[in-house]
Amino acid sequence: MTDMSRQVFISADPARPGDLAPHGPMPAAAALPDIVLEPRDLPPSDCALSPIGVVVDVAGSGSGIALDLHRLEDCMDDADPTVALSGQVGSQIKVRVGRGWLLGSVRNQRRDGKVDGGALAQLDFLGEGEEDPATGRIFGFRRGVTRFPVPGALVYPATSADLRQIYASDGRAHVTVGTVFPTQDIRAGLYIDPLLGKHFALLGSTGTGKSTAAALILHRICDMAPEGHIVMIDPHGEYLSAFRNTGQLFDVSNLQMPYWLMNFEEHCEVFLTATGAERQIDADILAKCLLMARQKNRLAEQVGRITQDSPIPYLLSDLCNILQNEMGKLDKGHSSIPYMRVKSKIEEIRNDPRYQFMFSGMLVSDTMAEFVGRLFRLPAHGKPISIIDVSGVPSEITSTVVAVLSRLVFDYAIWSRQETTRPILLVCEEAHRYVPNERNSNGSSVGRILSRIAKEGRKYGVSLGLITQRPSDLAEGVLSQCGTIISMRLNNDRDQQFVRAAMPEGARGFLDSIPALRNRECIICGEGVAIPIRVAFDDLDEARRPASADPSFSQLWGKSGGETESVARTVHRWRAQSRF
Image (cartoon, rainbow, N blue to C red; front, side):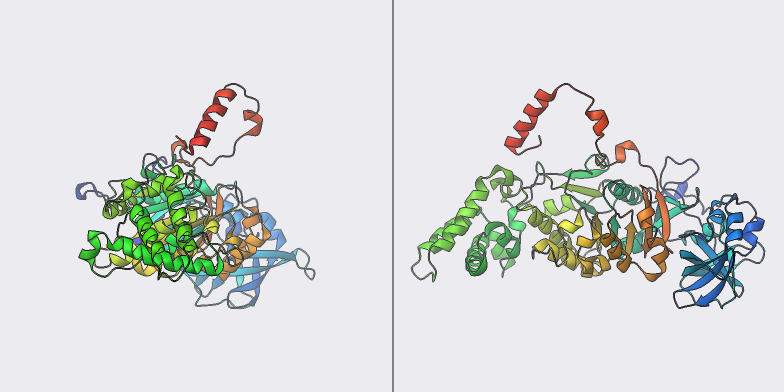
């Protein structure tokens, strides 16, 4: 094993003394040599060197083991926290296989009624490594199993030194986000390329620290790649404060998203109100008139053949005039009611101040290149993330706005394949609202485009990050496309079952501990880590945390003063439909 492959994960948190914080490539003159940072481990104790059980049966993904409860009690007093937890549910133990070791995770335990002081447990295989004859340490650890143990093979406690080698970086680009449970100094890292290249999902019940964990991961990625391209859909305005100094912030006051960027399907969601057979009639009328409105722009002549989906600017007044003219024709084939219905809806939206961020008359000029560059951070100028707060968007069109933003990410990736590849990460908070399961699906365009990104985005350099507190309400096909799953505590049994079905077989022992996780703890499994791990997330500075803390009723209800003025200001913003 090379020195690089033995390099232990180093912290990306500059607040940690003695650690190195990667902030992009260093100048050649200041480049540091590769350093192997290995804290000194105490020699293994007698407990660590003595077996705690034997293998009794073997299957393809795990085995049954018999444990000595007296030996487990002896291990509980060991100074090494990893040894102290040996044999307990969720802990790691190792099995002697030839000249190497097989690492496993204990899934469950039950008393062995046939043996006094005995217990039976199921072991999930995690991976295997060789033993260094000189030191006895594990090296060359890899996921998967090539040599299985045989019944009667001895089971030993895993030590912190073992875990340090197992969770060591193999030299790929990574960020560290916390410490490996139960240790205090072994850093838990995420490999950036497989994490983003094969999508990821962050799951957790409300109040478990999910938003802070998302901010932590994104901050570490931004610190490592200050010229990256990240777009985050923020439905509650939580992340504006977290990225105020390191990202570009958008809301209804400055988003300025041109309405003509919508494709025909999105136009239908906004402009059509009819249902059933009438909706199809309205859609046919809108398709014809929308194409005619786009063709009036000079850009249409330069481009040549265009369709209703082509992002060519047009005037809403032109669209209304065309509808009016078509309505007056004798050979139109329909009554005037569908034309009036579509025209009335368009005029209603034009005159509604809540829609001015998108349907303002000032947005008719061709600003597509400027808008895309601003939104996707091209160039990034050291602020690689765009936070798009859609909490001020009228609820009737929130899904359509998210659909347009998501589709722009995907379409840009498709049409820029002849250029230098610039991968984009799209992060979607409250993902179950936009990609619901079949039971709650309403056939919206946002669900279709996010599903397509989940299935095809990897080919075009588009990564998808899903954050949700209700994974069971998320489309199952989308979650199954996420190569890395980061699961915090889930209180709902249906959510737990859903995540258990999505995670690989080797992580089942970790999954059983999901209901017992503390706040800011998680289980990470999949492509972004070498093997499934339980992680305690790092603390974030106050200035980098999202505004998602729960209010303290006992404290706030004990204070008084300024209520009248506060209510007056709130009513003013309420009436004006503006936060400012």
